[in-house]
Image (cartoon, rainbow, N blue to C red):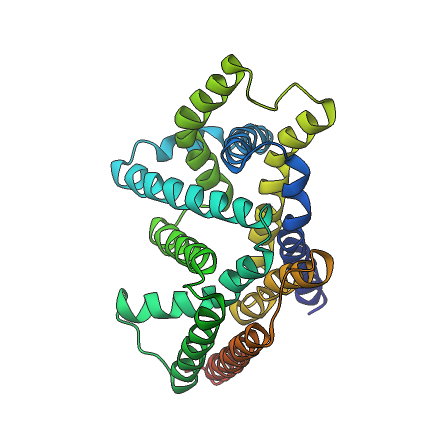
Length: 303
């Protein structure tokens, strides 16, 4: 019992730390300016690969990771996830560096609802009543925000769709977080590596021109991989319902940064839209807790 409690506490520490670090990303990416989002993402991918290679070497997993490349099906799947994560990274960095932190937070608030919709549409899963209620309320919230913005909240939708689809494909591939990320960044090394060489030859890149900025660009690899490793450590120690509830830490921190640190515009209609989304998430969280308890009771009764 003590061991289980200790493992749970460690998993909670890992999970909370991962989501807090992800939530603080809007404070980090602006430090990399005047590099544009494409250059930042290119450095992020290249240095993440370097970081992953070091960790894989230390943990003696390089050979097992390379062996994944022998499976054409997994390589095709990882090519798809590479494209999806690139879309997500570019959109997110552009948003945080161009005054759309609140809209980026919205994307990660509605992401669980996107995942549920994918489950119903693509995996033929059945939705429970509270899940239907959550999706319906969220649709109303998105409608209010669309009216307020005068357009679809494309940043939020792009982030939610790219991340939700990325997670769906990764679920099908059934790979570890570190080796999957290593191969994704290896695949992206060709276009991003050539792009950075092009910037260097033209003298338009930011790398090497400023020592602090150069260090920050290199650090993007560790900044990307460390929260992922922490998250991976939490998933092996925590119930799925706990992970599901912890995920709201990230967009809440992002939202707070956008509203109270960046002072982004929040008219009344926008507040109403977010409050409606939060009601939807409350319904979803309630369903998550109830379903988890039902599973626990069934296990306890030996069903």
